Image (tube, rainbow, N blue to C red; front, side, top):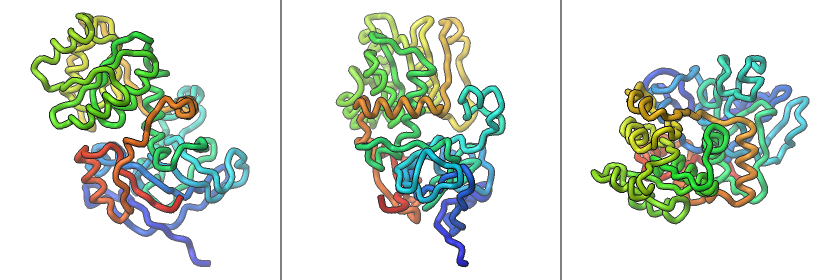
Length: 349
């Protein structure tokens, strides 16, 4: 019997030359597993960090963890989905299930975790498999392109609704007008907060979209009078809650400076390298510092409820769509920040 094969983008070793498009076997679907035909997969900042050896991976591994797909086959014992279902999945593909973190549903913190696209073959391939208990059906009415954005959106939902306390009337500062920043601003605005979103010079079009969708105020974070603008917006009180969504050291410093005494600071952006943190300034303000990494099962379920309620507008963030063979061009465009989310199309819907 001829073995089925597929195309996959595989990290085989160090350096940029260690990322290779190759032909590999279609994964076998075992008990309690689901074989998924990938339709769309998004290029994430983490994928770029993997490309540049700035993120831990277990090679060889097919990268990619943001996707939408269709169930191709289910293994023995699988009852939550059937072939033909449109699905996404959580990204903590391997976890022990017995540690304190797993027992709390915090699979991303399991000491034995291997994530989709870094320690477990991911979505930059025509097919992928997933443990069935991590697979979720895509709600009716949500397109497959938009569904491919659901992993970062679930992470935003966890940051804002599970790890932070954002109250109606809070003054919120979101640093970053990329997709993560704008989705954070959308959710904070829906929570009743007065939201300011910050970009830098050259972000005029993104700031324009943010004003239309998710923010009462927009500012240039590189402006010399940023503190004066902040005092005017907050009526002299600074911001109650700040979200750092850029993963840029200067952005982090600005967020700490603009947060009020005893305010809340949340780190969402990933730096990819060691950074210097002005903790003395944070300490003397008694800031509540929180970090938020990935999402739980409850975050995904809450996200889909919010989508059904019409809280999020996702279509403006869908960017160019490439074939997997064009991965180098897609990575260059994603790294340029000229578009919100660059996608691969791996198969027909």
